[in-house]
Image (cartoon, rainbow, N blue to C red; front, side, top):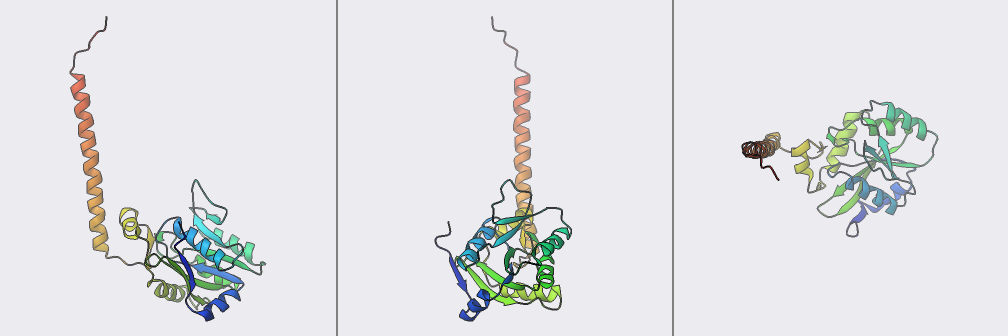
Length: 223
């Protein structure tokens, strides 16, 4: 599944900086459920990380050992706990998608990097070239908004997964890194809902017709 993927650094200088950075909070734009996390895990193993871990939202019937589950209804407690866990660890690599699939970037990555004196590693997942690229390494900027905008500006050049637009239409899933015209999204969402409604009405009518037809048949007594 990943044999044709390439794992790269944007520059040779960045490779040296990456290898000399002990505390890493790695961020990427999210477009494809599960596979984004899996390919980043494989990439960071390739880059030499011994124990890269991916933050993933639950619940899920399957969480691989390289995932750390974030409770679905979590309002800051998870980040505080992670800070307590990591504050005395000299080297770590944590990978996360700031949007969590819910479009808007959350502050968790910024708080982790700021509180743990870690670097933010910006990683592009490019489905156009089947590449994972370590794009930039930065310290947290003065504010979350500044840091977010810088990260998004670096990530926007990478091609999202082929399901990105479909998932945005069907279930409002994805990341604000990838911009779509809202009118177009709502148009296709309306078409999809109309098709579902039509299928439901047809199923209901066919079922009702069958019930009515058999209800008027005389009951045959088998002797």
